[in-house]
Amino acid sequence: MANIVFVSPNKYIQGQGALRDLGKYVKALGRKPLVIADDVVWRITQETVTQSLSSEQIEHHFVLFNGEASVNEIRRIAEEGQAQSVDFVIGIGGGKTLDTSKVVADELKTKVVIVPTTASTDAPTSALSVIYSDEGVFESYRFFNKNPDLVLVDTAIVAKAPARLFASGIADAMATWIEVRATVKSGGTAMSGGKPSIAAQAIAKACEETLFQYGIPAYKAVQKGLVTKHVEAVIEANTLLSGLGFESGGLAGAHAIHNGLTVLSGEIHHLTHGEKVAYGTLVQLVLELHPEEEIVKYINFYRELGLPTTLEELHLENVTFKELLKVGEAATAPNETMNNLSREITAEQVANAILAVDVLSKRN
Picture 1 (tube, rainbow, N blue to C red):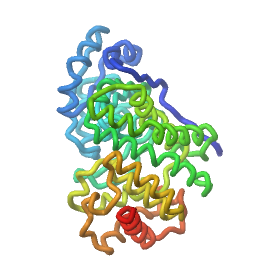
Picture 2 (tube, rainbow, N blue to C red):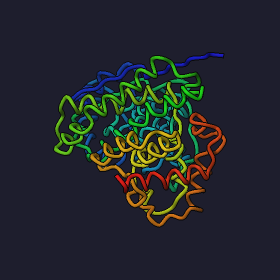
Picture 3 (spheres, one colour):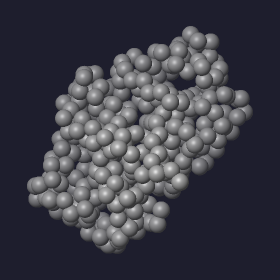
Picture 4 (cartoon, helix red, strand yellow):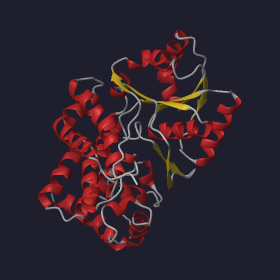
């Protein structure tokens, strides 16, 4: 059995105006891609994508993504791709669009190109997708035999996306080193199927260092739609460093808490993935018995990015302890990544830690 498994996309390209060269970069992959995007993203990118593909004599078929990375949506898009005899897939958009695109490519047994239009998650580089129900409740992870063939990030487009999504990506990426070091400490297994490599640990640590150094000025620049060196560095941290770090280094409590929170109903479902991960990261720090001053360091950082650090900001000000136990039960399910933190953590401990974060945040 392999002890260390390190995985990555075949190629990663990042820069202003990179989308204009999409056709040049994908022409070796096939001649008729299935292009997947939601209506908002397609309005922004359609002209550039169409011109770039046409310049390389690449005919494409577009299909609209309806918003949820669910089994039914995946089936619908895959069937359309099969009917159109496409030979590879291009996913353009946010996390759920990209997750869906990877599964569709897997179903069609084709190569896949990932084009993030936000830096809101670390999903783009990975060989896995998160599957939800049609109502948005977490169901499972789906793993693939290979990572994307190309990840192309146009930083000019990313910088003009809502700053809230940029902050969400920082929150998702901030969990990387915290979860990787927990996985190392527990002797856990990374999503890639092996133990965390030295490379993955170094990448995860560099990810957090980059975010603490440049995250706030980058966020302020994106609020103005600007691409600066701070923005470029944070986009790389959110997308590449976090993606490589979590997949070959391991997920733990922060993402397990996120998945647990999806069982609740109400306004919390309007929060982004990263916003829920931010709170989950704080919960993990409490479960790990970190000093208050260290936890407050993360709380203050998240506050500057407009991320939730209290139950009220999660829209859970009226949550009951019984409901929090349901979150804890989901977060500590047998196959959850909480195992990389500790197999001894109980649903009740999770519920108490969720409440403890709220108390700490209000006090500081």
